[in-house]
Length: 354
Image (cartoon, rainbow, N blue to C red):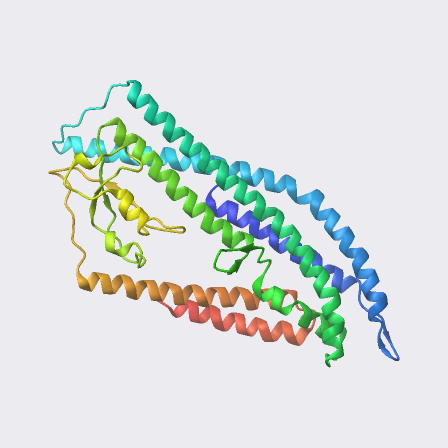
């Protein structure tokens, strides 16, 4: 299972939770009388449906979460192995170009290093797994909360002038559907859905696992110098380090005395490889590797591409939000209105060329 498979599986769970909720609103409609809708009787019926909905979710999804989390653990371990293999290929290529590195023989010091890195990888897997479990059960609580608040908000919106049962329910769920099941709250107060959080968490965990694997292989060959990969689209935190050489004292066991380069730990402390980071490292082979300095024009291009990427992501998110409202609206006019808005944002996203 790839990272996209995991994200897709979690997104399916989110959609299933919303589908089931809306089906209940379609099935258990408020009774319309001469005096208007009988909201009191409808609320009692919906609260009973909510209890059934909650119980079914508690029975159905934990097993799926366990399977996803197992695949997550395997993904992180595989990413670390891929990092080792990539650096091995870099080293073999450098040897063919005349490098004179020799693989270190196993010794007590090496054994201690690899045990430490194994513990770090194990701790990364355990921490990511635990964070996923919290987020996964939070989405079930969030679904219950949305359902419960919709039951009571529907009558409130009806009292403000919503003409039909469908319009009242649509107004009650609109904000929730726009945001999705945003069950994860970051330290800055921003809320995100489980699948959005998973995408960030997997990218961050994979990055760290890959760096650990790469560092293990460099240590085996006694190489501790690295260069931050040169790419367009680097974010503001990482752009100052692109194309710069460092001594890797974090993953490869480097020391200040290994060369006349700054320590990688300093750059990381200042923002390099932040959560959700897309940048990476390559091995720096003294006398063989060449570094291309980042020009002011290239820095400007990085900033331009970052802004375009943010704009494109904004349009994509807006398209998804309006599409979700359209899909789950009970009123046909609302379905058409938000479906049209979703299509407009999709067109805008396609027009942004990175």
